[in-house]
Length: 101
Image (cartoon, rainbow, N blue to C red; front, side, top):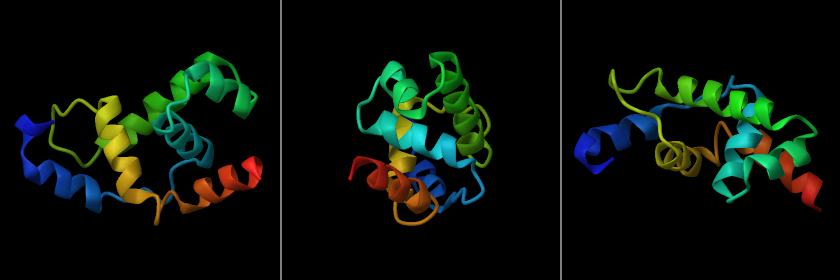
């Protein structure tokens, strides 16, 4: 990530995805909490293949406004999640906190 420059971080911070599917948002948050695909699948009551598909779709959405050729790795997804918990991921975070309570 460092080789791609500070501009990438600024772009990620400004790239809000309020319309992302809520299940994709939850999967991203759970992945960032260290959950495995199997654990996410169990929590979401879906297959592991579905979780993998959700994360691929979310990665594509995150990558839409990044420089061409930027690989949206788990680290970039994690950075994006960390920067957007208070805005476009707030609804998914609230749902996850409601489930955990």
